[in-house]
Length: 274
Image (tube, rainbow, N blue to C red; front, side):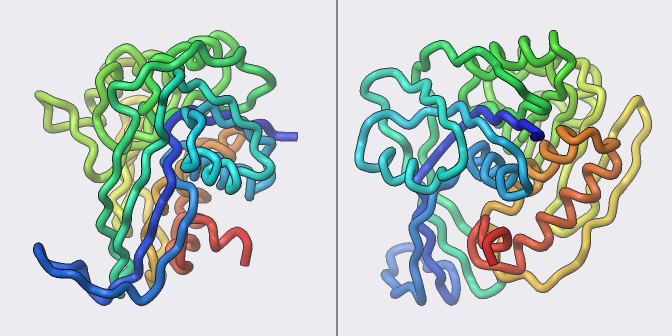
């Protein structure tokens, strides 16, 4: 069975459906509300699981009521908790309006300390979101030594990425990703040893830089209901495709199709359980 490992952030997500984002100082009633687990690595892990992979998630949970709730959403995923004693899993709040656009307020794992991650077991692809940098670097070193693809979910710049970069096979950057001191994040990644770099732009084209050549991949256009977690779904689908041995171009196109399907449904994983 195809095996995907993911290392990174887990959160508890509170999502509110609203007609429009509330202006400052105003209280509004949500049309509906939902509780789910979230975080880039967690949603990517659940996506790979939904696509048929055996999945291991290395994350920080701790021992709180919030972490217990998060675990309830991780059925079928092997979880390794690398949180130090006293860690409190973060909570994220999101408002999704009628256009499907989302506004998020979230804490993350910045400043937290983590224990040594487990030994990397059977694995066909490793996905990293950069939130747990030290465990990620350790796992990436092992994966690289074994010739396993290492994929970065580059949602934003994080301290330590310059050390992680040479260990990466693919960097999948968000539209918001920026490298301090440079205006071309794709070129920076390539200069730091990453063979394939791509940057998504929501429903816009995906930019790709591979072996010095730039190209663009179109994204399927669909009616948008909810964009929450779409990037995470893309990264999980990309990791799964690379784990099965798909060529990079096919993997990117396939991940774009799955992510586009996800935004047609409420919630990050509803598309997979319909």
